[in-house]
Length: 145
Image (cartoon, rainbow, N blue to C red):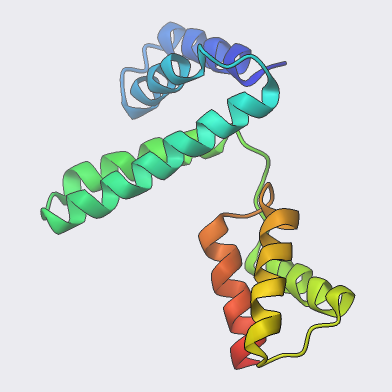
């Protein structure tokens, strides 16, 4: 089942249950965004783009001291994330980065190796964790461990 089909099904359920809240609003946003998608991969990329957009909106709302709107965006993002594969936990991400370091043969606290590990980790883990979390974890493992 495609993400769009799943979203349509969830919209119907929400309407039947008379849920007129953030969830329905987020589902309609998601549906509108996914209409142009043709493959499951493009649907996943569109959902990720929508999440990134929401995260930047949260930062803007916080700067403007609009915590109500920031909370609204956080709720929408949590709904969007339900349509993506589960992300790695912090410990799983750290273990994956350690594994990449061993496979590459990189040395910790070596700046040249840091970039090689980052590139490999981003390539390998892009579907399993957010890019920001991957780079933070690579820095933590390579520099501070």
